[in-house]
Amino acid sequence: MDKISPEARSRNMSRIRGKNTEPEKYIRRLLYHAGFRYRIHFRELPGKPDMYFSKYRTILFINGCFWHRHEGCRFATTPKSNREFWESKFSRNVERDKAVYEKLEKEGYKVIVIWECTIRQMMKDERHEKKILIELIEDIRDNTVSYKEY
Ligand SMILES: [Zn+2]
Image 1 (cartoon, rainbow, N blue to C red):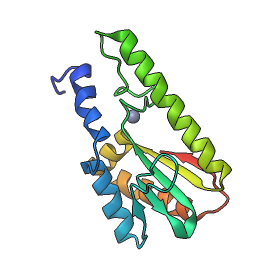
Image 2 (image 1 turned 180 degrees about the vertical axis):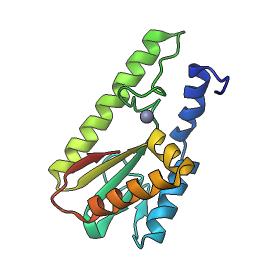
Image 3 (image 1 turned 135 degrees about the vertical axis):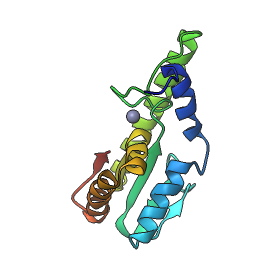
Image 4 (image 1 turned 45 degrees about the vertical axis):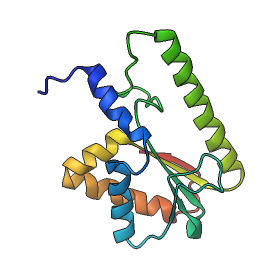
């Protein structure tokens, strides 16, 4: 077991808020090698999606569990001090995400969200990596899917 406190871990996890984080680069690399081509941080779409697969009208968001409040996830902790500040900040984040996904879906885009904790597990476990990658590839190609979360 590691000795890092849940709060410290959340702060570490929160680094994904930045651009071009390790989990982001990792997912890009996987999908690039799987033959997909995409735009990154695509400004012309709501929410500036992390990845956009125009051929499949598919959008992929790579979400940090802390900032985007992954429900039920151990990394979605709330700092003990300034609780009110954090709670209002978090609820704004969640509302914003929801609005962005709805808008995109309404415009006929497929939205896929991959949570950071899923990616970290993929990075550690080759079997898990393979399993998720196979599902992800299917979902990107499948135009009957409108929303999916990993
Ligand atoms: Zn999570």
